[in-house]
Length: 291
Image (cartoon, rainbow, N blue to C red; front, side, top):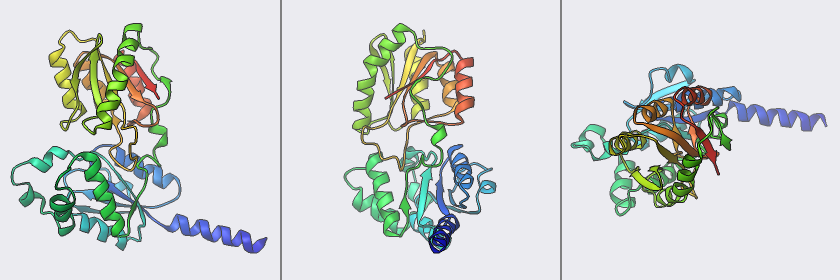
């Protein structure tokens, strides 16, 4: 019994001594993830993507270094040097930057990234294909990507109305109308969000992102009173690109005249969830989670 107990303690000590890798893009999620990892007693070894991560991120990590967005080889070398086997990849990286003029000169891709872009992804560069290829390349280098929400489960949307104000009958009717449409668009890897009003789709998200969709919906529907729906691909790989709503999203919805927000339960991250819900209440925007 004593030998078994000692073996168990040694096993847990080895697990806790193993750092968890963090590949960090923009926004608060990398900081929240680092805090979640540390709350388990494990250390954080972070690769912050150059020009993307927030200034406070390095102070929330035990190991930290910067690397270019398309310098996958450097990601691997840093993480392996720190003894990382498993990593979380989280935070926004604008895909539109890939198509900017002189992108190759600015980003200086390494051979791993160049091979992915011009060979593996030659015929399909949608988000799912792109991120799956990155994950495969990391695994070839000895780094396994894990569920990006593992350490921030308290920030996932839950079932039912999360705000004090519940959706109206007409808003629920729009949600029921738009929910399967949003699912199909997400399944086709076009976008994760749509705007609807009175049984009509006002705007659809694509590469430009949710904030741009919200702005466009506000312009197309100046009288407001529209609903935003956000959900994941039915077979969404939770290792990356998990749909996200942040406090700024709520502010943008309010400015654009939206009056309701519906998100998928356990598949949409609500950044700083308690504060976000308070903000939605203040803006009188009902927030509901649906399966």
